[in-house]
Amino acid sequence: PAAEPRPLVIAHRGASGHRPEHTLAGYALAISMGADFIEPDLVSTKDGVLIARHENEIGGTTDVASKFADRKRAKVVDGDTVRGWFTEDFSLGEIKSLRAKERLPFRSHQYDGQFEVPTFEEVLALADSAGRRRGRVVGVYPETKHPTYFRNIGLPLEPKLLGALRAHGLDRRDAPVFIQSFEVGNLK
Image 1 (cartoon, rainbow, N blue to C red):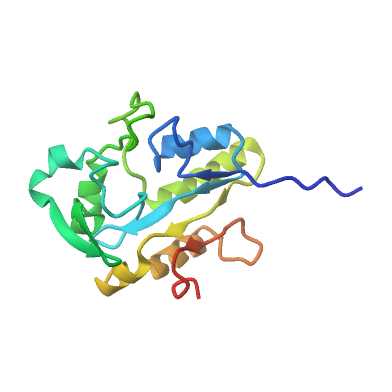
Image 2: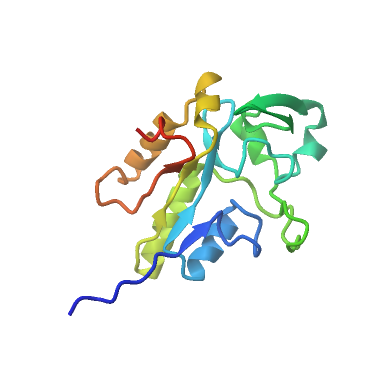
């Protein structure tokens, strides 16, 4: 008999509320809690590396203000003026010197400062290794953030996203991958 259908459990930003979002620890906890897919939001560093952050403004999700106070800027992103620190102004090495923190005041801040910002490559490697250890596939559900903005500043997200998926053998029709975006053009 056919197996009963069941919903997919998608860990939006990882185990949000239990660990700082978009960290390997948050994704790993979500997988251990039964998530079928982990959902990293993707933005770019100035050297073109995809990293997992909810937005390209990282003042609320990292300790960037204490380490790079002089880099605070105002930018127009998708028509909105945003003031803060932006991933595209930092190299991967600089991003790796930062530590993640919980952005919402009503959630636990117990793990603030303990985890670095992961690259998309690291997220894919985690999904693969966790799936192998657990004996089940762990899919990825990447979301490109502000793709037109990044394309317009010379850091298009799509080639890096597709290259990473290809490098991990996830460019097949049956791969456990869903790509999402608030824009249609970059999905096409």
